[in-house]
Image: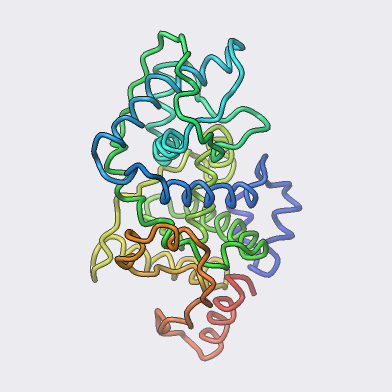
Amino acid sequence: IASSLLAFPACELSDCLVKMNWGLSFDIVGEAHNHRSMLRAVHTSKKDLYTPGNELDRAIEVYAKVFMPSLHEVFAGKREYEAPSVEVAWVWHLHKLDPIAYKNDCEAAFGMVLHAPSGTSPFLFSRHSGHTDNATSSSQFAISCNIRDCATRQAAFLWQVRGINYEDQDFLGSAVLRYVMLLGLMRKHPKSFIVPTYDMDLIWHTHLAWPHVYASDCIKIVGRIVAHDDSVNDRTEGSKLNRSASQTRQLFFKAYGSAWEKRGAMYNGEPPAWFWSDRARAAAVDAAPPPPPPPLPFTPTSGQQGADYWRGYQAGGQD
């Protein structure tokens, strides 16, 4: 599939996907909206779910000792599913952002990879904590990745995806297409660190929330379960992230004849102080228009190449 993706020009890519009958087995655009709703609830929570401390540690403990054994009992037919509290939903999400660790941890404890039951969303949560305290499973669930550090790294993700463009169905539909294009690059360049823009990253994080679907889709498109590393955040000149983003930009344009950059999907800088102090304002949709195009990231071989690149940028990565 990925080789077929790379054989089609960007303007025909959507038709290509339809012809190959590629698609996710859930409404990923709808789940992206649910995803952002959960992020807003986490941000406005009265509990500090971003920094190591008693409140985050308690959420991790309830997740590991109560929620996950309870979820296993759902799949064993022993109980009905109940959505977790927002703090536990947040920890569950963070764990799944490391798909390899999550898979290994689930299989070690339960012999299967646990996921949201059919007809439910992993981003839905209950306002009442403690509703799963009656779990009776004796399974010992150990978490092999560092949830505390991940919570700190993900604290600013909402800042990057709070723009009004993320409310737009066409923008998110384009993001799904661009994410699939990114997966195509991962298959063609397995040794490269391929970097997403934030529209792609929102879809990637949403996809990861369905671990069984994510694994199946990755194997189908990339040939392997793609690891997700959110610890590479140094944006200084010459850093791994800086160099890899530059390489991804050029590989993307070479493969698809379309811009990797997308208006409204680029890095917005670090959050201002009010993002942390005025949580209600921070959780609201930012209605400001996306910024203008950044400087041309590379020297085009022709004036037409530059024109093609920025036409793709303005159109959201599609000619």
